[in-house]
Length: 315
Image (tube, rainbow, N blue to C red; front, side):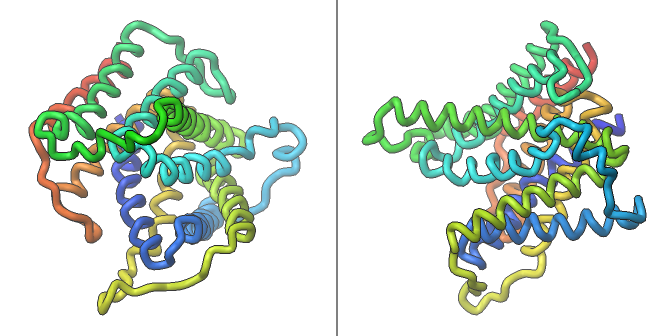
C-alpha cells in the first residue's frame, strides 16, 4: 500500500511540475533554459537531501569501474523524454502527444519486468498483467480523448495538419512511443542505481546531475537568449522556480519504487497519479491554469485506469 501511495503522489506531482515549468518557460523565453533551471534546482535540492541523509556527496570508485555504462543514462533519457514532448505537440496535437508516450511507457515497463532488463526484478507477463495494462491505456484514452470525441469540442487537436504526409505523421507517432519507452528505461535504470548506491536519494542526485550537465551542453550549443520577462504588470510568481524540486521527488520516488514493485507496475501507478493530477489542475485551475471542470467521461476513464492497476497488482 505504501508503494501505491508513493507512486500516486509523485504521479500527481508530475503535471504540477509541467505547469510550473511551462510558466518558467514563459518567463525565460526558452524551453531549454527552463529545463536547465529546473534540473539545476532539482540537483541542488537533491544534493542537500543527500547530505542530510548520507552526510556525504562522495561515491565509491567502484561505481565507475564495476558497473555497466548504462547506469549513467537515466538523466540523459529524461532529457530525451522532456524534449520529445516539446517536439511532438505541434506535430501530433495534445491528445496523441499524451497517448503515444504512455503506450511506450506501458509496453517498455512490461518488457523490462518480463526480461529483467537493467537488473530489474523479474515479473513474467501474464494474462492479467496484459489486460491490466490495456485497461490503463483505455482509461488514458478516456481521460484525454473521449470527451473531445463525444462533443467534438477539440477537433483541432484530433485532426492534425493534413498537408503533412501520412508517413511523416507515423514517424512522429513512433517517435512518441520510443520516447515513452526511454522514460520507462530511465525509471528502471534509476531503480537499479538506487540499489547499487543503497540510497534512492543518491541515485536521484546522480540522475539529475547528469541531466543538468547534458542540458548545459545543449544550451551552450544552441545559445538561447537569457532573459526574464514579466507578463505585463504581473510579477513572476515565486513558485515557478520550484519545478526542479518536484521533479527531484519524482525521480527519487521512482528510484525507491522499482526495487519494491518492478518497473511495469511503478510506471502504471505513476501514470494513474499523473492523470489524476492533470484532472485536479483542470478542475481547480491551479498554478494560473485555465479551469476546465471534470466531465463524466474523464471520471470514468480514471476509474478504468484504477481497475487496470488493481488487475496488475492483485492477480
